[in-house]
Length: 253
Image 1: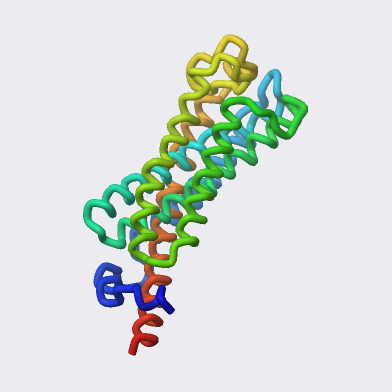
Image 2 (image 1 turned 180 degrees about the vertical axis):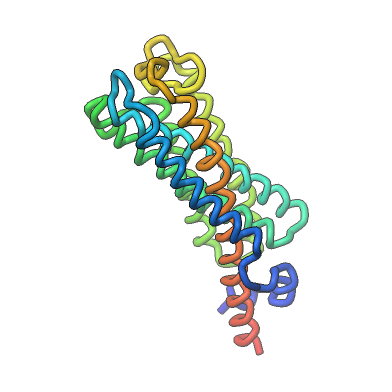
């Protein structure tokens, strides 16, 4: 009951957009995202030829790498939301931060799962403590802990404040995952863009259509999918918080 009593009902409702029908722009964006995703999958799975050395399994990189950049965009939205919440104390920014973590974590898991599927036939193992793989796993676990932190704090204001600070600091794991392949010479993870470390394996230079497949899928998984899903998640959270505010109001009467 203490958690309910700590909810500032009027301020929550004032800071929350009223639930309405789906905006036309969101409908268009959703349809465009679905169509673009199907096109991207077609290009990755059928249009581009198989890799000369790795065969068909190399196609998974056209989803694997773009999914990471989509996660990075979503986690970046969490940083923006956290900073803005600490500055303004408006709940809408906390909602953006939460949506960024949930969508970013989903895409980070896509990145990890597709990576393990690629490793099994290429490296003959489901997992290895390669620096890039380890940092990607730490990144995902860090954002899982963000969700646990939110669920473990009853006071809404304290929960939002702590989550904002945590979400900002957690982005260091994204930066580490992005750059570790350039600063650790012992990695065996291939660098798809730019020169690889001397001992890296998996050069895609001889594969025709790699650039085409990546340029098609990068904006889809790296921008369209995270933005569309975050927008839907924000609208869902607005509905959830409005319902919770109404329940708290009834219990306080």
